[in-house]
Length: 61
Picture (cartoon, one colour):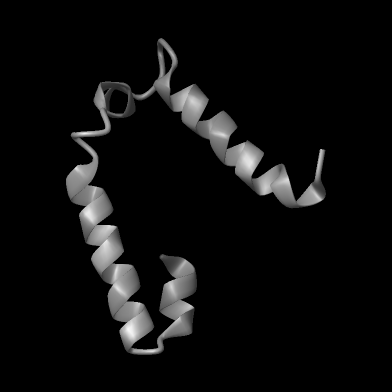
């Protein structure tokens, strides 16, 4: 496995843990549709960081 994929694979493992039985109730209830407001908000934050050339903030997003 590529060393570069390790952080992504850790993220996938965390998400799986949160969504499994006995995991986080909030995470388990989420659907693509219920996550749309968060996706839209994060998208606007990325656009704003790019427009302001705020690359530190962009990295956070």
